Image 1 (tube, one colour):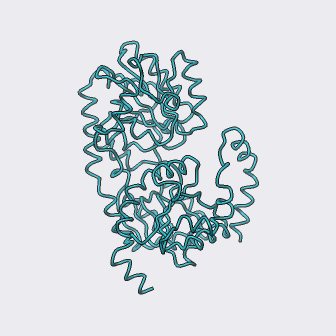
Image 2: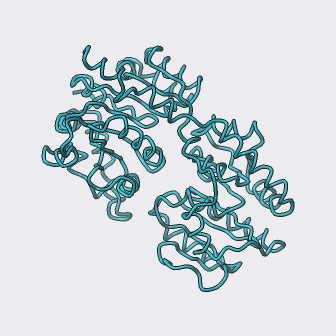
Image 3: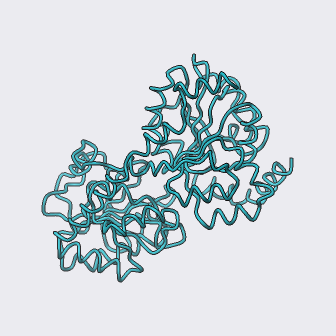
Length: 439
């Protein structure tokens, strides 16, 4: 009851912000009933179909959703009698999940009110709940335990700062961690943090990061080829992709691009903002700086002519960044020059790009550290160092290619997390069947 009151108070306090974003950016308009009241019996029945039980996978947004297709594929093989349904908390995550799995398998995750999460679990007849990375919702996890539905975390990550924050509220949150049936962690340090927060040691496994397995293996795909043709890329071009950008990073990229192309007219720039509500403002920024903007969403056919030096491609669509990294030889991962804490740098690494990122990668510290230690990426402190990095990649192409090859080798070395994760979950195999019978 206390948590419900706390959530309701927070919702009321944030309502002006929510209302503004609904009106200004069109966010939070969909799925209101599912979020506030949970899944109805009718909608849950549609998701469940003819299956006798349901495996519910939750991924908060785009990055987590992108981890699920391979996991869903493997779970479907091991549990053909189960419906596998996917929830997300954001509009972009929901849309990407629909793109991957179809609208008949996707719903908006209920807010962590007791009535909403209990109703969803009951109506789904959920047999397993799997959380991607970590979505710590005490009411949801407690309701699942009451209904006999084990809750597992896959690709678990828990930063030092987050773990310290959770431990400050140990009386409230330790029972939630203790209820987790299994946690697949990205590394040993993360596993220890989960234990320190209350997970039983025997319920943790070091499975590695699914992002290594999910990273591309080759540029020789139809998805990459179609984007290269669309953009008019040829062998003369050197393409720099700055992806998952947050406010301020696009302006930084444009300034560096303008200075570098004076000596290197072969340089081309692709910008991929993280949030859809910023697409229009980034397009305006490109034009204001004297370039022509080519918007992916408004140009569905390939260029009639070659990509010109004053054209900047703006990828203003969802779920495409993974393939655009493959168009580039030089990559800068956004969200790392401000306070966001970085984004996934393994996708450009998998393609063998010369990878760089800014000083703040707190959300991907382990992955960033492995790439840096293995000579597969470069951390730059500011705009000047970023310009130096781009210039080196243009002046010394063999060295840039070596950086990319190192990145690919590191990615390949750490693959195998999906196998370990599926083994940890034990859903659908003889172990899980015997556990259910014993229960």
